[in-house]
Image (cartoon, rainbow, N blue to C red; front, side, top):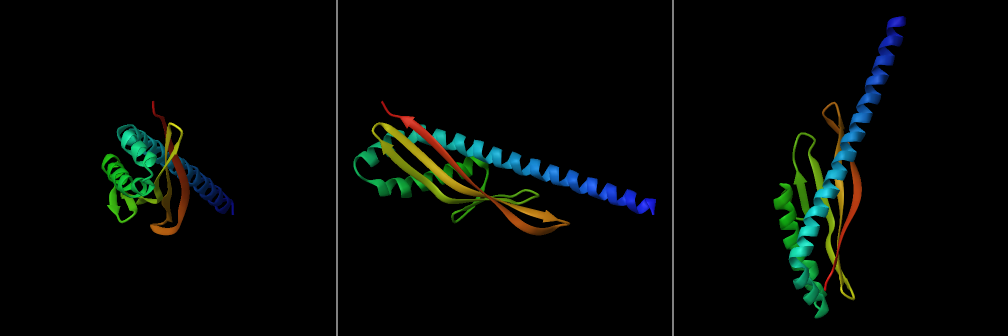
Length: 149
């Protein structure tokens, strides 16, 4: 009977260890995605700030949501090595992590401050024994602010 208790204790410890490693993987992935997206958004904001500023100042708010969103997504996909399909961008490796951009890019202008914001969901499939149990959905919001002089 002592063997059963020992086996159960080892199994519980292994499950807890697996849970801690999964949590660390998820938090590292979310942090990396947020940082990479912030880097691309900052770069995009600096490169396109004058055009977006002039567009909003002239009352053309539709232009920022269509033209610049497409260009931002293209830059994001190119710099992060993602595969794009419609509004979804996939990063495929063993775990098949999927990034879904729900509200790709919005621009606001308050006096001489340009604010670009992107909201998206990071969807991470959680699997056990080579079967997908569920998708973990983590909403993220990244902003970049530039004061135009």
